[in-house]
Length: 417
Image 1 (tube, helix red, strand yellow):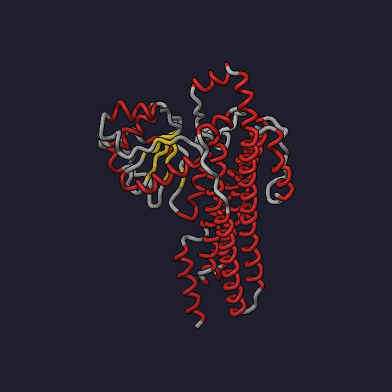
Image 2: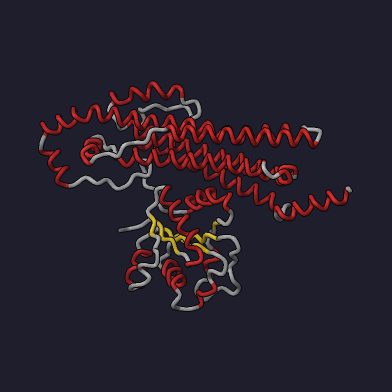
């Protein structure tokens, strides 16, 4: 099997590397993540073949990751040298505490010249992964990250030869198309609700900051802080309620999958839409958790610099998620455009109420036109992430660490006594 991305790692970074591999898989990339099975066999013939046939090489770097690379038999050294020799797109992913050694191991000096990704802090992990995806030469599998279609040659031949049977299948498939289109549209409607929750997080946070900064007394500030914690916890419960009420898609039978393929609709495309719904739900939950955790620390809230840092992050991460969801919406429209017109009825009823998605362009565009819209929205998300990282980096030039700020707050408190 040919893979898009080879993930190289050390045992000490297995959990982080596995998380990175799973995140990239959820984005639609085919990932080779060896759990030391091939390394136990004939290393050169097997692993080198995988590296030679992938486009991208992701190198996960925990602290001291390159210290053993002076040893010619070191696995990571062999993998990196092969990737360099094969002229692969190498992307170092630096975890917390990693720095390039000086001097670099012989033959690996060029590693410092590649564009690296910082993925050390949990709060920025999702943003770092989206940034990483932007550096990959591989493209995620299209049609809502579709998987390879699995239709046997015999089935295709049978459908091609049996004209009468084909017509009968279309008639038999008619109610299936309608039911599946309703399922997909219900999922899109649920995504529209989550989209609204994405907008609520920064709106609620910004309202809090405005009221907090206008408050004249410590008592009023504390009252606001506790009130907004309650408000966000309530909104988190609403998100959980929506998620738990949502009806899951039943698994398609092989026969239903064949019928869907008559209109070039892959069952996996519908299933992927539901997977994206799950991802979006957890994304929104994490945004709420971050805001609540910040509000729960009175000292962090009271510090002007940290409050600005959190405002930048909460606003930026929400906007990036919204742009990504716009891309998913256009992918949904691309999918719906493949259905016969009789299956569009529920979409026509539902779409006027989708006030959070961008204005619908309807179901009359070509596949290429829908994909241009998807790519534009995805690039917008990447641009927002890049700007967010730049803003945070600039601010961190003024704030060394949260601990330093806390020490400064304590020192000021004692000096005022």
